[in-house]
Every structure is written in structure tokens, then in C-alpha cells.
Image (cartoon, rainbow, N blue to C red; front, side, top):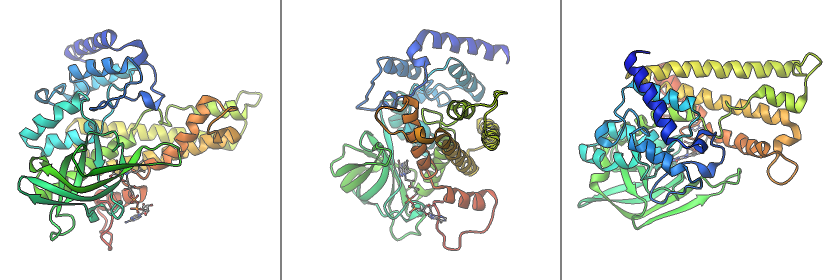
Length: 406
Ligand SMILES: Cc1cc2nc3c(=O)[nH]c(=O)nc-3n(C[C@H](O)[C@H](O)[C@H](O)COP(=O)(O)OP(=O)(O)OC[C@H]3O[C@@H](n4cnc5c(N)ncnc54)[C@H](O)[C@@H]3O)c2cc1C
């Protein structure tokens, strides 16, 4: 590390020492302590907001975004130093946000100057919470079949239709939404990318209850909702291009999601010892299980190293591209495999749901095991990732039926 980076590293360490409360240097386990921000923020831990504000004030919630929009203005090398220092100190994420992970990068690329000024600073400071309006009942994998219409009427688009599986729509302030702006154009070409205020008259949101017991996502209905024309990002028919760029960011994120649900942080060996015991030499008592654990750990390591290589390429300005589909596919399938193994090893205790007789981590694990199955569906299912890899990474011929999320 050169002198300049070393100085910056010390600055970061001093900043964390001064601004990150000890409680924010512990693992984030409870979902209700997640820092989502927004116009109606919920901070169940008193230190969450001060930590978010301190990071946002320096632009460190979006370290590489330009300073003029509130970002940190750091180059890749400095951003990596900051990331390393935050990780070294065990800091919790200061802000979780679809705006940071998905919308911001495409606004920086496709937004007008006025749109960047209007939307990006609020994302960096955690003042606005966003949801993603892509999927519809007849348009999930075949996303370009979406039917929600936006018809221009004076200075506003009038939106009619409905979205489904909209994560956190009931808590979000705004939605970035795919709408059909030109029904006569070919299906990929008649789509617009519209930013919608969730307070607008005509929007109804209904939470959907899941097998895990939670209701993280909703149905969203639009009935004559007027949205300012200035909220269209890109040209009216450019929505599909923007949607795909955003999906690359989303997939990169899902593949490296490290939070309470991450299967990476759990030691499979420790669980095997706890539930199945060891032989006289201290080794896990089942040779075939030892093999499966070793394989799962090796696969995890290889995946991490490959992702690290890809992150370096992104930092060097190359991507992210369609190869994020490979990470999304592999990362989520691997996570499912690890959770299956954990539940299997724990036997009866692996199915703990609530009540007495189970340890707290067992109850969390059962829900995480179920949640891991959703990760291979959200952001495009594993089958769709295989299609994208075939077409856009390997260059194989098209699906003859022309279907698929991209
Ligand atoms: C946890 C979670 C959060 C989500 N959050 C959001 C959100 O915030 N916003 C949003 O817009 N959407 C969201 N989604 C929806 C998600 O994007 C869709 O569920 C996903 O794209 C699949 O679409 P579908 O459910 O309509 O399934 P379908 O498209 O009906 O697919 C059904 C099955 O058929 C397979 N299949 C379909 N087409 C093909 C093909 N061409 N080749 C091979 N197999 C195929 C699929 O792989 C799948 O197994 C979320 C989903 C989950 C699980």
C-alpha cells in the first residue's frame, strides 16, 4: 500500500473509532435492526441512525459515487481501503437500500442531470426508500411481456396495471417501475423505466404472507396513477436496456449478499461436532459427511475467489456484465446446498420453528433454510440464469420460443 493509501487507511480507522458505536460493531442478526432508512424509517436500535448519518455525511454509504450528488468521490483503490477497514472493525452496514444497490448505478449512467440531482442525494443519505416494480402475474421470467401501461397525458404518464412480488412495497417511498409506453412496438422496445411516488393517488399495496411466516413482499396495483413525465429515466423505449443494466447490479448483489441469512458465516464443522459428535481422534464421526462438508467449503472458497477476481474487474471499469448470472446461479445454489446440509445434520432440531426446546440459532436457521430457496428465484430464477449464461456468456443460439428474463 502506498503512503497516500496508508494515510487514508488511518483516516478511515480514526473515523470508525470516533463515529461507529461499539454496538454497531457487532453482527447484525435481528432483521428488525436492519438500517433501511426512508421517509418512515424504523430504527429499533438507538445507535443505528447516528451510524447511518455519520457514514452518509462523508458520502461513505456510496463511496465511489460523485461528490456533487453526495457520494464519497473515492476511486476504486480508496473505496477498497474503506471497505477493508469497515470489515476489519466488524461494522454493521450503515444503510441497506435498493436505491444504493440497484437504482443509483443506473441513474448515474442513464439519468439526466436534473434526475441525478433530484434523486441521488436522498438515496445516499438514506432519506428515500425504493422498491422494484418489475414482475407481474404474467411477466416474471418472461419479464418483457409486462402489461402495466403508461400513457402520456400532457405532462404526466397515467399508469394502470399491477405488479407482484414487490419486495417491501408497503414500506417504500418510491418505486422504480417497468411500464409499457408503446403497446404497438416490439415487446422489448415498447418499455419505459419510470420513477413512481408510492403516495400518489390510485396506488394500492397488499402484503403477501410467505411460508417463512414473514411478509417481505406485496402486490401493487395502479389505477389511473399520474406520474410526472420528468420521472421517466432514459427515452420512452429505452426501459429494457436500463432494466437489464439494473438486473446486473441486482444479481451481483444477491450473489454476494452477506447478512444474517448468509450461509457463509456458519461453520459446518462446528455444527457437525455439535449434533453428530466426533470419534476418539476428534474427527467428525461420519466419513461421508466429512467429504460433503469439505466439498461445500472448497466450493465456497472457489466461489469467493472468483467473485473477488470479478470485483477487481468491476473496480477497473469492466462491468458488471452478464457474468453476474454465473455468480447469482452458483452463489444461490451453493447457499441452498449448505443450508440443506445444516438442516440435515441437526436432525429434529433442524426443523425448529418456534416455542421451547430449540436454541435461538436453530429457529433462525430453519427460516434461513426456507429463505435460501427464494434467493434462487428472485432477480431471475436459476433456469433463467442458465439461459442468460448460454446466450450472453457462451454465445449459444437463442431460445427458439424467445422467452426468458433477458
Ligand atoms: C424473495 C423474492 C423477492 C422478490 N422481489 C421482487 C421485487 O422486489 N420486485 C419484482 O419485480 N420481483 C420480485 N420478485 C419476483 C421474481 O423476480 C420472480 O419471481 C422471478 O423472476 C420468477 O418469475 P415468476 O415467479 O413469475 O416465475 P415463472 O416465470 O412463472 O417461472 C416458473 C418456473 O418456470 C421456469 N421457467 C420460466 N421460463 C423459463 C425458460 N424460458 N426456460 C427455463 N425455465 C423457465 C422458472 O425457472 C421457474 O422455475 C421476487 C421474488 C422472490 C422469490
